[in-house]
Amino acid sequence: MGRFKFQIIMGSLLGLAFIAIMVLFLEVSKRDSSDGIVSGQVITTGQATIGGPFDLISHYGASVTDADFRGRHMLIFFGYSFCPDVCPLELQRMALVLDILDEARFDMERIQPLFISIDPERDSPEILSKYVPLFHPLLIGLTGSGEQIVEVATNYKVYYRRASDDLDYLMDHSSIVYFMGTEGEYLAHFTSFDSPEDMARRIQTLLE
Image 1 (cartoon, rainbow, N blue to C red):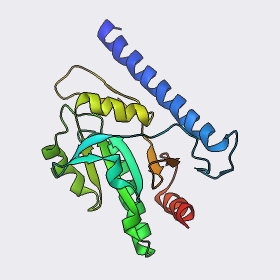
Image 2 (image 1 turned 90 degrees about the vertical axis):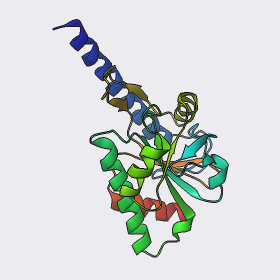
Image 3 (image 1 turned 180 degrees about the vertical axis):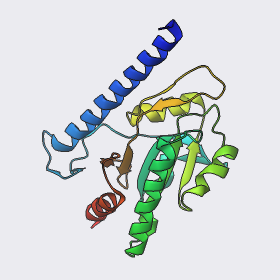
Image 4 (image 1 turned 60 degrees about the horizontal axis):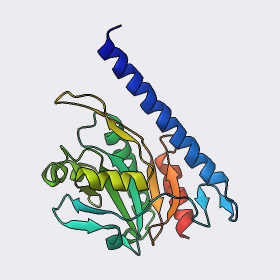
């Protein structure tokens, strides 16, 4: 096996291991709280250290901070527009959740879906403005400088790395949808094992 192939394989294995550790951490966070009550995917004390401030650029070209969404619940996914499989599937799943809630006559102004790019080198506001509307009219795409993305990804415990030095490179990244409270606090997360119906049901339960 060539050295280059070996490095790619090892890098992918390390990425998968990190993602597995993060999923385990989040699952434990759902069940364990020293002072609070845990119910399903909700930590009522909000003690999980997930989330934080951000200052990014929307796909409309406007400066956006976490404070702009106070009073609404953020439904957040981290990915990139050049992603060939995982990201489109997750964004479609988020769109289905929103459609289910809308059909149930849920007040959609209470939720703001966000797609935060982990590939700021390619995901400019112009690129996102063509990509994000393909999934849902309420979805807002966010990008920024490399430093800004590192900061928000760190706050949300999101793993990502460039998989190669090729021009058409892929990104290794975790695949978790976060549901945040009206003050930006962590409430729940969803993985690929959660169906859109389950996600919508849990969100409705949280907001009752």
